[in-house]
Structure formats: C-alpha cells, structure tokens
Length: 409
Image (cartoon, rainbow, N blue to C red; front, side, top):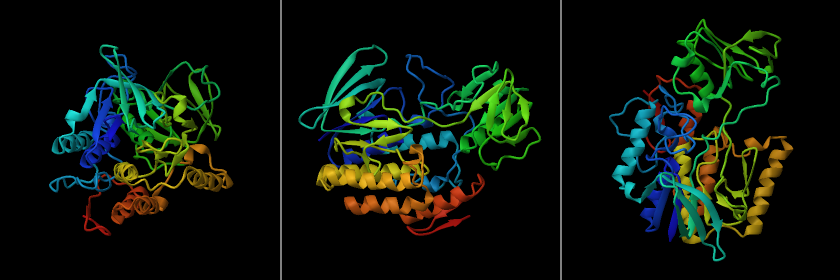
C-alpha cells in the first residue's frame, strides 16, 4: 500500500516506522525543515522565513511534565544511562532524532512540503495537493491511506473576556512565549492554570516585578513573593483586570495559557470530518474516519501519555489496513452515538469528549489491543502515568521493573 503521512512530529515518525515495518510505501510531508513537531524550539514567532505559521509552541527551559518512562515508543526505550525522569526539551528532541536515525526514517520525509488539500477519490484512494513552501509550486499525489499527524498545539485559543478590546497593554498567547527576559520588571497576568501556565508563570516571576496566575482552581505553584494566584477574570479595563473575588490589579502584559484548537485546514469537505469545540467527528476509537476508514488521526486524545498512545493507535490503524477488522459503518456510528450520549447525560462540554485521563487509560489501551489483535501497551505505563499526574515533582526518578511494576529511585 501507498501511505501518506501528514507531519513529521512524534505521531508522524511512529506512523512511518511501523508502516515501513509492514512493507508499505510511505511518504511523510513536513512543512518545516526538521522533524520533531512541537518539540522543536525556535526563537521565531508567528511566521517562519518561508511565511508559514510557526507550528511549535516550545519555550526555553521547558522540561517535561511527565517522566520519560511514559514518553517512549514501545520498541525504543530511552538509553539506560539516562537516569533522570523529567527531561529537557533538547533531550526529548534528541530522542526523536535518534529514533529516526536508528530506523533510517529521514529518507522518507519530504521537508518544506505543506499539505494544502486532502480529498477522497471514488476508488477509496486519496488525492493530496502539496505545496513547496520555498518555491510555491504544487505537487499532486495519490495514496491508498492517509495518516493525519499534524498535532494540535499550533492554533491558539484565547477566551473572550469583557473589556478585552479596551485593555491597552500587551496581550499574547503562550504559543508566542519563548523566554522570560521581555518581562523584566513588568507586572504580568498569566491566564490559565494548566502545566504550561504554572511553569511559564514561575519562569517569568524570576525577572518580573510581579506575576498573577489566574485560574479556576488554586494551583500548586512555585512559592515566590512576587507570584500569586487569582481567581478567574470578570473584566478587563484600560490597564488592569478585575477578578471574581472583587480584587483589581494593574498589569502590563496578559499572557493567555489557554490551550489550542484542533484544526485540519487541509481536509476537504468531502473527507466528512467536522470539528466543533475540539470534538473531531466522526472518529471510531478517536482514530478512524468512519466515513472513510482508510484515514487515521493519530494523537488526538488528551490527558494521556501521548507517545505510547500514538504508538498503539498506529499499530491499530495498520492492523485495520491488513486485516479489515472494523465493524460495519452502521455499528461504528451506533457505538459513537452511545459514547456521545453518555457524555451528554453528564453535561460534558464537547471539548472534553477526547479526554481519556488516567482512570480510563488502561481500558483504552486494552480496547485497541483486543479489537486489532495486537500487543497492548504495558500496564505499568498506565500505573506510572497515574502516579505522575497525581504528584509532579521534577526531581523524582523512576525505573520500570517489568510490564506491571515500577520503582521510585
């Protein structure tokens, strides 16, 4: 089979590796000049030298929010001499580059190639229009299957807040944050208490006059005299913000660490995929385009250890191409409807429909394994992921003992 892969980040790399293992002819399209996706650091913001929007949201000094023991492809663990569990961005990027080198993946990646249109053909094949970002010329390809691996940390989401247009200070999203130096002696309001919000707030506080972290819940933050938490914002004024507790603060900069939108601008309407509040529909098991089941989306679920999830999703997808085990379209839609109804009864917003979380992770791995008849992800990954989510300490070191057990060193 001829397989087209969109993106040379972690999801694209593991798709390429396993597809080659099974004897497929594979081409990866990457719009930048390097592999690694969101793990690639660049000083540039907004657009690169070719006029392409910057994909990566990586910033200086970033360390992983999960231990490396749950961040590896199943057949390619980190070197044993690497003792630390929480790694730097450069160490993780080195891992992906080594993965590509060991399995000789580079020659299958076409760099500076941006996929602009994907369309199904009548004979179940796929047509791809690809633009060369340097010359602007177009290229045309046909594939038997398409793996969508473009990631979802490149299109910022900024909440609507009353008075946003009135505020005279600087407003930006963490997608454009790179280093703390521009915030020297400034009063900064960081919006969003996720892992990136708390991490960036702590880094900026090293140089800023004061940092306020606005979040729904009081987050665990690094203790500093000039770093404090605030509840959600109710209104912005010329130079400040009013919070739900009635307090007001003047700030020079507002930095939104408020997540990203799932976007697939290259998918034609004929692909039959819609995205509403980050709910990508209709996908079977968060992977398969039910309307065209030779299109696979890799890495969509969140609150998961992304690398092992991508690993088993790719193996699931290739098993489908090989064995055709998926249920009929009607049954897949019925299963998806039941999944949606369960969440509607809980009044769950659409943006949480792809959430798996530590409580359902092992179950998800087992579902994919049993359906496709492939080895599951070792249970120890789910156990250690739950432990790391419960208490993140960058000094912790773990070691996996076997498929069921880990120890803390």
